[in-house]
Length: 276
Image (cartoon, rainbow, N blue to C red; front, side):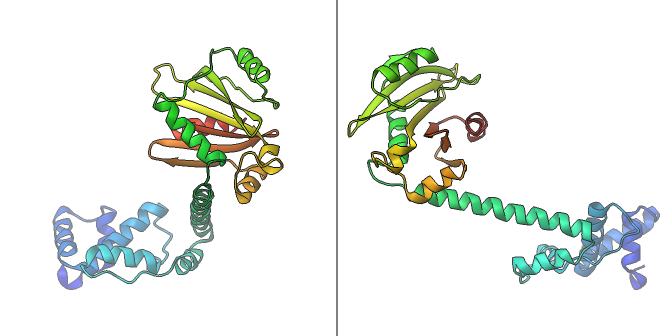
């Protein structure tokens, strides 16, 4: 068989159209011949993806290169992302378009994450809301910052904020995952700011919420955030950072900027606070 071995025999083997003796010979040749091993990987991979034997498209070069690189010890030179996109577009239109959309979406999501990380990294200084929120959360975890009022009553906390000089309407939503625990009013340059805390039933996870009126950042400058950070919030973007087991979320809701810091999962935090 080895003298007339070809791709058709590999196809017949994959489609289970040869007898057991021939199968053994095909397997032996594939194992000992890198070129036929490549043909086997290429044909079987294409069949699994397309699921139709009557469609015969040439395997894109970048796919061939990746398969060959797994067979040979020396690496095969990779093409640029744009070259791979061009080869994808040369495939059957429906398959090419779907692959193209997946790649573009992946690039977009990666770029958004990269931009968000840069926005957070550019925040600095003791007057910065991001710096304050992270610092306050760490103090809560360490037991260095306790609530001035302990209650699960939303109206009681709103009344506490108002009677202690908070001039804006603080949002205090109710959640199924956490219980409202208490609140604090802080003061900076004569301005009063609202903070409240949730805890999960087990007490393991804490959600700290710090909110200020937008004018405190853009007009009075009592609290600081970089201009590009505020612009992103004004566009309706929800900025999220997750590192070292702590997730930080910023968003604008009505006329308030809300900062959320928690040791709960990023997915749960985003699900609950994105709709505020």
